[in-house]
Image (cartoon, rainbow, N blue to C red):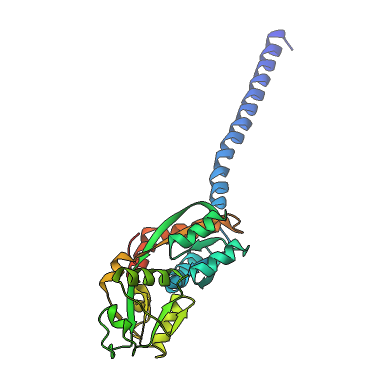
Length: 270
């Protein structure tokens, strides 16, 4: 082969190699970005159980939010523990495993926060105002907080340690009234049930509880309740077993849609 032709062949071969190398490198670099969104998308998915400790007054609204959350996130399950906020706080500080705590007062949340069991800062998501729950038709003609002091009436209150009980006591103190109930209940739903079962003539509960009773009780507003409104904070717990899903559940509760559900249920905006 002539020398000129040989050099030309070598040059062409080298060019082919360069083109192949560049092409392969180009294919490799273009494939990497295409995988990033897939990885990011999968990391945004949540699964598993979310354990929520919540004040009894949140029962209906949170159960509805739980079903919504499970529908939005297949593979998840929301398990609730409802009760008096003080009892739930004691369980959390005592080591009970939970992801989220939603309390009916900032004082109760403070107990958990000061114990070092909260991750981050609690977020206020609702407020609630007291109302007197009577039997349908208000047969005892109860029209004010003072009326409840009539010794002929049977009245149930939440325990003073429970947010609804503390708020009721604040209202009574502000009005200069003394009331001796026939029973102190462990949470607001228990106080409401006493009226529904006709075991008492009235109880002091939240407006949201009267509304959730669907006509089984009648609500009576009283002026003193305006200065005894409870604030509801929600927080991610420090040792949450499923923090990723817990954050998503909290986001649903605090979203505009979640706020609307609470407002429709009788809660006040945060």
